Length: 204
Ligand code: ITT
Image (cartoon, rainbow, N blue to C red; front, top):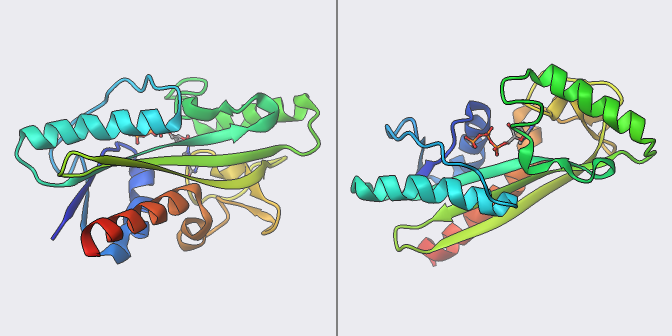
């Protein structure tokens, strides 16, 4: 059976990835489960570049150890239009990695309020890079559109979910069940595209 190793140290992301990838029937493990440690400098200028940096670093380690697997990475974040796309590729590092999301979220609501933008539009973006055993790689991007909430809501999901409001559902992504979030999320959309690529590559 083909194995996929995910180059992520983020447990919340990994939980979502497992659920979204489940129906493919491939063995899906985190780099930690493979005994691989990797924390390359994410010095790309786009989600795509950073996803490639993370996937390639783990692909190289796996290859050197003789592990035959597809290695994938997810680089994601929140882009707020009235803040010129901030926090964007710096989403995990915004205000400092160890600052609680309650503080980061309150700060982004405050800055959005202060901008005076009546629309408050924002999107979650997820780039997924995959390195294949034949040495080729692919990158895809998924997004989901929303607005910055006026107050945080919900206790599911992680990170910026409590302030990402979906006008057509009348709730934030932190109010959705895992299944509901994965069905519409940036990560769900990117991974579904990547699953199609895998199916074409290995099953046609
Ligand atoms: P890895 O690089 O190890 O995968 P990370 O958390 O550092 O983990 P990123 O650099 O891709 O990952 O940063 C993603 C950040 O964007 C994440 O920490 C959240 O702050 C935010 N984010 C991404 N997807 C999200 C989601 O579905 N819901 C809420 N916040 C999200």
